[in-house]
Image (cartoon, rainbow, N blue to C red; front, side):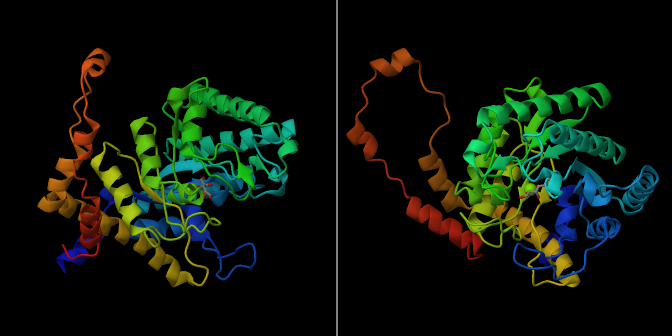
Length: 382
Ligand code: GLO
Ligand code: MG
C-alpha cells in the first residue's frame, strides 16, 4: 500500500511529456497508423489528470500549419483554459520543421535561403506561442538538418547557417522576451543519414560560438545518445557540468539501431538508474520530460498505460537512490576506491615527488563486487 503511494506522481516531481508522444498514432516507415490520433486538448487534460507537471509541444501540434489567425487564437484560448482548469504548465514550445515536405533537405541548413527564412519564421511563431502559454524555453531539434550526400552541402556552410539562424532567434528573444531561453537537442541520425551536431558535446562546442552563448542550453535525449553507441549518463553529466542542462528527454533504446523511442527504463535499467541518480543528486531543477511513444501494438488505453509506466519507473529508480546511498557495503567500497576529491598538488610538487607505480598498482579495485551489489540492489534483494 505504502509502496503504491510512492509510485503516484506529484506535480512537484516535475514530470513532463511532449504532446507529440501521446498524439503518436503508431505510424512507422513500414506501416500505417494503428490507433486514431488524440486531440491535443484532450492530451493536455489527460496528462494533467495523471499529475504530470507540464507538457512540451511543437507549435504545430496545437496549431497546425495553415491555421488562420482566428482559429489559432481560439486554440490557444482553449489550451490555456485547460491548463488553468486542470493545473498543468507548458515548459517547452519548439517547432516542427521536419514533417512538411518543404523541409525535405533541411530547415536552417537548407540550400534554399527562403526555406531557411521560413524555418526561422516558424520558430519565431513558436516562441510567441510558447510565451502566450507561459513557457520560457524553445528547444530546437533540427531533424532534417543533415545530409545523405556529402557533396550536397559543405558542412562549414551548414554550421554557418545554423549559427546565423540561432543568432536571429536570440536577437528576437532578447528584444521581445528577455527571460526566454533556447536549447539544442542533438541526434546523430534519422531522419537524415547524418544530422549536424550529432551529440551534446558537439552542441556545447557550437553554442560557445554563438553571439549569446549564455542564452543557450542543451536537451539531451537518452535514446539519441544510445543510437550513437555512447554513454547517456556521461552525456547528461557533461551537460550538468557545463551548467547547460535545460530539460531532458527520457526514454530508452537498444543501442546502435533505428530510433526506437521506447518507454523509459524498458531496455536499460542500470543506465537509467544512474541518469536518475544524476538528476536527483545535482542542483538540476528542470523538468523530467518523457519523449518516447507507446508500442505500435497499443490502443488508446495502452497510451495511458505508457504514460503511467514511464513515471512509475522513474519513481521506482528514484526510490533506489536512498538504498544506494544508505547501503553501507556499497558506500564503503565507493569511499575506498573513488578516492579523494582533494585537488592535486602544484606541478612543481608533482614533478618533484617519487611515485611508485608498483605500489599504486597494488590498490584493490573491487568493481566486480560493486557492480553485483548494484545489480542486486536494483533487483530488490538488498
Ligand atoms: C526526435 C526528437 C523529437 C524532439 C522534438 C523536440 O527524435 O526526439 O521528438 O524531441 O521535436 O521539439
Ligand atoms: Mg526528443
